[in-house]
Every structure is written in C-alpha cells, then in structure tokens.
Length: 184
Image (cartoon, rainbow, N blue to C red; front, side, top):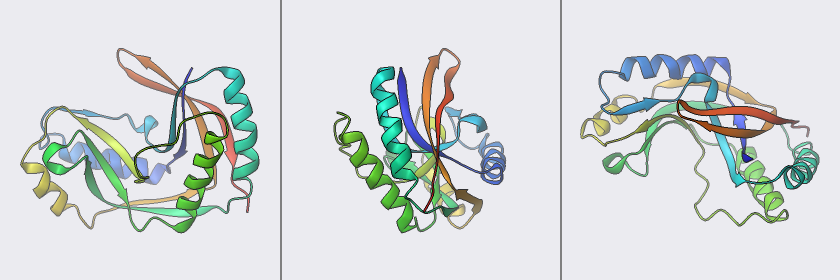
C-alpha cells in the first residue's frame, strides 16, 4: 500500500482555505484544487510499503508521539513550491512553526529510518497544499504579496495520522490507517 504520515487540520482552516480557493478560482490559471477532505500537513511520505512493516512502524510511532506535547498552528499567507516563478504547488503557510512541530518531525523521521525507510533528502518545510498548478503565472507573485498577512485559521495538533493513499483517475483518496494521539 502507498502510505504517508500527516497532521489533519481543523474545520476552521478547511473552511478558510476553501473560501480562499473559491476567491482565487478565476485568478489562477491551470489549477487543480485539492478537496477540503484531503487537506493535511505531510510529516513523511512513505511510498509503497507492506502491511507488516507499516504495523511495526505504527506501533513504534504510537509510543513515540505519546511522548510529544500537543501544540497549535496558525496558518497565514500562501506560498508556492518550488518558487512563485516555477510553481507547481500552492499552499497555506504556517506562521512561525512552533518548536514542537519540528521536534515531532525529527522524531517521525528518526522512527521511519529505523524501519528501513531512506532519509528524506529535502529539508522539512511545513505547509498545507491546497492546489496543484499545471503552469506558473506572473500573477502569482502579486497574489502572494496580497495575501501575505491573511490569517487562514488555527489548528490544534493533538494527534498524528498514518494514511493510506489510493490513486484513482479522479484523484487520490486518503484513508486513515492509524490515529496516534499526542501525549506529553
């Protein structure tokens, strides 16, 4: 199965991002909006793995995240990856990512490494992808500047999910495979 580890966001953030997508619909060309039910912050993409490996990983992840304190995220402004000039992803940005988020990420990365997954090569840049772009546009820089201070809501983080990702012609469908509460 194809799997990843993620944080879900609050209904408040989902609603604000959905409203923003509707606002930008006619301003951003060649875009595929992510359904609000699929919005999440990826901590680690695992790729294809077997049930046995995933069960062992989930057991260890559960024990690890139980030692992590819950925290809160604020979403403010938007960003483009890899850059506004070559954008393929539009995302809501996390305003001043808290140290607890980075600690959680490092713990997840360490745990998946012990289960045979290769280390992530890219630096962790927490964000909430809400659109995939098929073409960049000069208008993106102006939109980014315009929305720089737009607050898109807050999300308490008190659990981590392991999701199965099923690819379909209509897009990916995510199924919660495990729900792991933070403790601390």
